[in-house]
Length: 97
Image 1 (cartoon, rainbow, N blue to C red):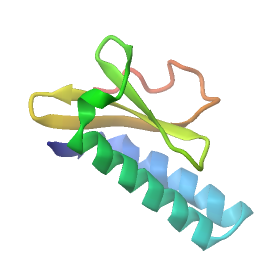
Image 2: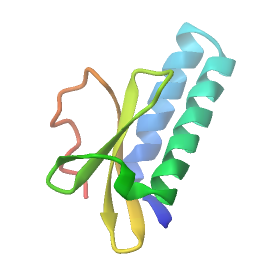
Image 3: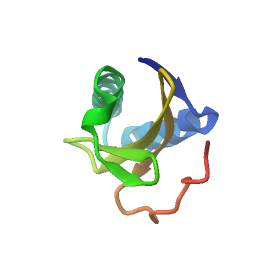
Image 4: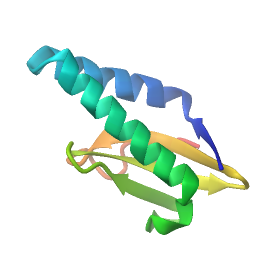
């Protein structure tokens, strides 16, 4: 399946990477990005293997980092809606389409 990122996902990822660069190192930020890309690729390859959390929105937890992303399947597209910290309010950015 193709992957389409909501336009605000880029700013979500930039903010997370900036944080890791500021408090740790560029290497940690790069590790976060690599893991995120790997899981987005997994979601594109087998989207229905991830559980539905609400309506048609699925959640993918990263392993090393306390972040997850939400996506929905729209036809032959995996649409990533948000990348957020586990402790964010559950409704944060769910309105994104």
